[in-house]
Length: 120
Image (cartoon, rainbow, N blue to C red; front, side, top):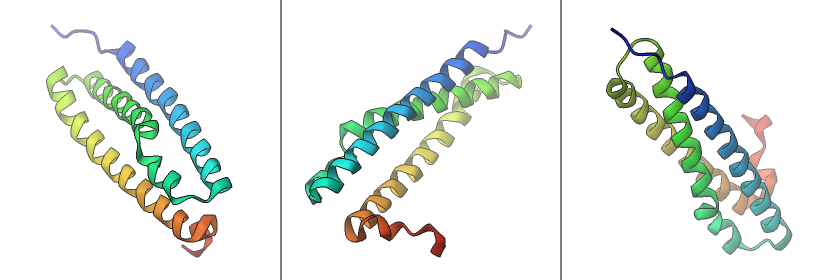
């Protein structure tokens, strides 16, 4: 009556998100190091380019597949699972991308000392 839950897709989505996250982290660290050496606003403004967007989209796609597969494990159909997983992923991704932009602006204005987390 019911098909097997997509355990393979659950694992594939998780691995895609983790590997894309590693690529995103590496690209962001390299870009910030390059900006720190040159202190050029052009480099920091270009951080939102394809160098970061492609791994970030990979993270979002992996998370979407992971969420939808996890929802399917609880007995929902594929259409319902992706109808629930896609908006959650898009909203989270947009909020995180927006926050990254705000953090980069803070770094550009005040350097790394502008991110004093102890003051919060």
